[in-house]
Image (cartoon, rainbow, N blue to C red):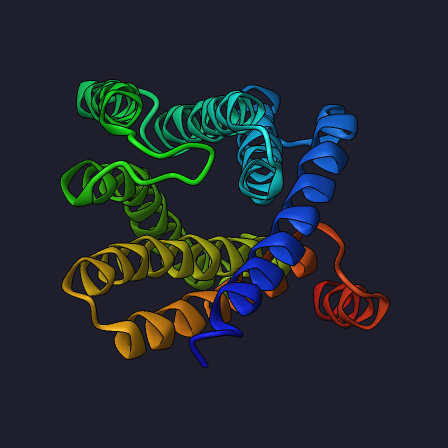
Length: 249
């Protein structure tokens, strides 16, 4: 397992990120059809940038040139963190646009992402492979997890509200499904971040078997993210027909 675990994680991450990049580009191209163009365009760019940034990391670790690897890593991290800043802005604009607390939370998330990025760059000692130290690595993953968790909580709350509105014929069933899919995706990505911290700790302790097991688990948690993104942005014909029938009835 120790040998295949990194490849398993990379495969899961790459497949999910390709789907995310396609979904983000699709949403950007169809932004005029969005019910709330301002907030939804933030979500579209957040998905596209973060997915594109994550796709750069396998290339950064594979190149032989340390200078090129460092440049690719910085580029990938910049795209990833830029996407997460937009995610925080999306959650604020979509769910709490009139609340000061929402603005503060978005600004705090952005500040945390920028600060941990600076810490990572300062702490790196071995490039292109990223070894930033346990503390800065944990801080980076928590800076990702917080806006994801906030997004998951808000989407779950909206899903519960949408279910009640659907029951009274006040909302479309597919809209409720979209909130559920967003909740599943962001919740799974929170687990991905926490597993990354578990892997970093296991590696620091020299527990190779535990690190490999957590790495496989992390790769598996990209699967529900992949399904949620693909179904939400590219719903299959049978699902569209089912919800069309539900709305017609």
